[in-house]
Image 1 (cartoon, helix red, strand yellow):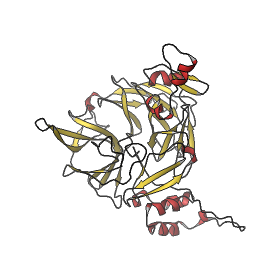
Image 2 (cartoon, helix red, strand yellow):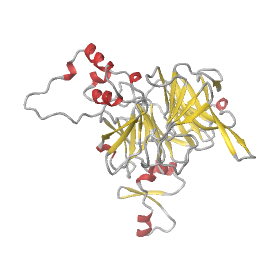
Image 3 (tube, one colour):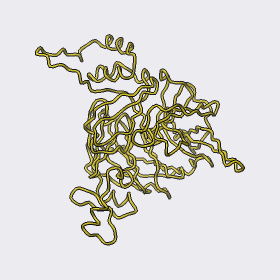
Image 4 (cartoon, one colour):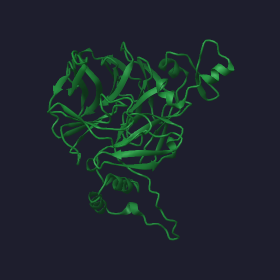
Length: 403
């Protein structure tokens, strides 16, 4: 399962131990850095170039190199692999901070990682920057899971009717089970290293509530009611507001009263934004200030027990008096990137080496669950056709790329 990641920086491992002082590479003229950046041949080269310092990162725009897929990784190894779609190449990166953790979000170019104690950290996989978020507590656990959960000596356990020492140990929540009990996905309002406030909102494992905190400010998560009838499946940040979307496609919008940054957001349902009937595999993203929905309309042939599907896009302007979905048949120069694993998806304008008016899915919408190879699905918006590409990675952990 995969996340779509923007290729910011890779950490260089080739600094030599020379006796003489190293040059101050950050002081190179901006014009020279931009000239070098335009000549970089690949995303891998760009990632190495960007690792030097912030002036070098600023010299290479996102449009030059498209998103990367983060492939499933072994939490015991501390090494992750990325796949560059445009170059059809994969490369690995040593990231000690992923050891012993499971991903629970990809937002604003940062990964959200959770360990067996339900402690959460944000990691920029290319710069190595790390920002802590509050851990899950008993209140989050009670809201997240239908089962009784308790914490003993730093580990979380699913509680059975008669708790003995042996039964409790057998019910310890494993690392790979954490997303199914606590934070299913964490979405950010802005990068945590930006000058503006970074707010995190989390989809809980099975709840009509969401969890909210301010990075670097709050010491605990605050639970917020969504006023939705079904469990929340996705969260999108659009026009400086968070949207909570339940499994049926119903939406609530969170707003703060007044301009106070410490005000707790309150939810208002948007009944006019029910999804079109029959639209499956819905994903949501923000593009140009508008909320977009990507889904598949399925046609079934009962005689042959076969089916076909067509990818469709809808959008709405949240500032309208009565927001509603309208069909989009052409997105112009936009290229849409949709993660099947997380709701974090995004669009890019004039992303070089990528086709326009196209949707790139991190995995096939209707793939074989027993096929461990990783494939992209590319949908032509105008034609309504889809094509599943040849495998780009064979038999790695999990059946999908992380997005």
